[in-house]
Length: 190
Image 1: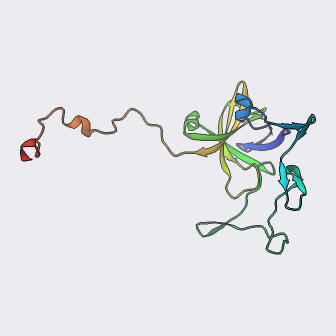
Image 2 (image 1 turned 135 degrees about the vertical axis):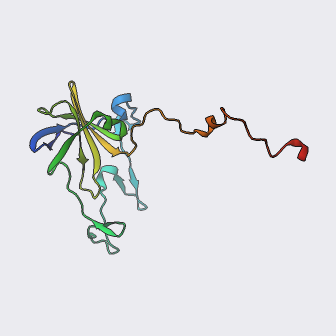
Image 3 (image 1 turned 90 degrees about the vertical axis):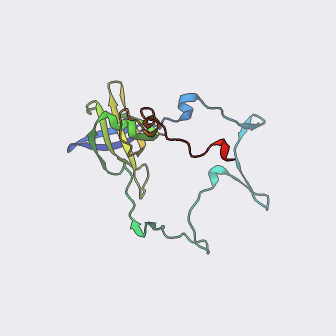
């Protein structure tokens, strides 16, 4: 994937950024490619039709059609009885960001990581939303800017507050100081 341009807005100041390819498991751990060759030529997956024709995977595209095979209208998206409007891709417009404390990172469940060239942004953590494609539900995003680079973290912000040391179950310690009540059941009752 070639680098894509992204417009960020922090405190009313617009900053141009470049989004690089997503960092995936293959980038971290490597990848094994299973390939099939015949006479030194690499073969690719496809479909064999009942009449003997073959389609390579790259020759097939998907689209929504009605019963007669005509292109179908774009689907409407509803949630809880309300129609949702599609939000444009983050690459088509500007994404507003706000500065948040670094502790916010502990409550963030990251699903995708993108290196970002965001020159001009001060070090810190910024919060916004991100839509790679047009979608009704943009995903939460954090932009982490460090001295060695910047990363766009895409995922979901969880509402789990940071807590100190607390006793979860106090009833375990309640009987230690006082006299224990007599057990209403004993073996003599059997």
